[in-house]
Length: 82
Image 1 (cartoon, helix red, strand yellow):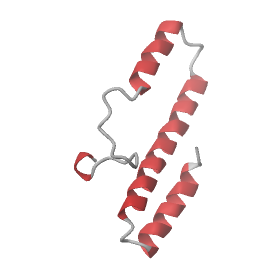
Image 2 (cartoon, one colour):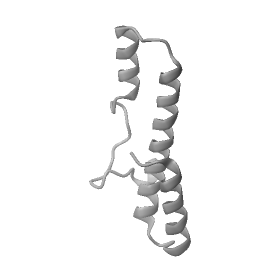
Image 3 (cartoon, helix red, strand yellow):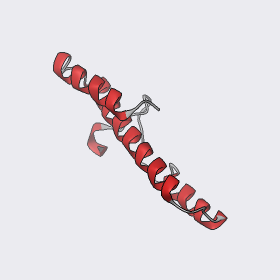
Image 4 (spheres, one colour):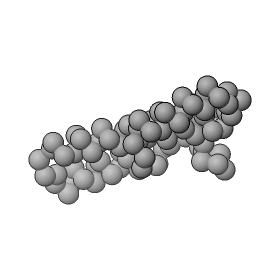
């Protein structure tokens, strides 16, 4: 996963230079949010004591894709679901 700052920079450039590139902008926004969430989760988990198997299973269930909104063929949310 790319660092959030690099994604944010690319997103800002795309919005400024190609404002009609809706799909690219949407993809970059999703990638940026996922990267930020990943960084946060890594930081939080690094600060935690070792997890029990039950805690690991609970976290896996939370992070699984079950219950996620439907994605279109490109892997992006439909505009009405964002």
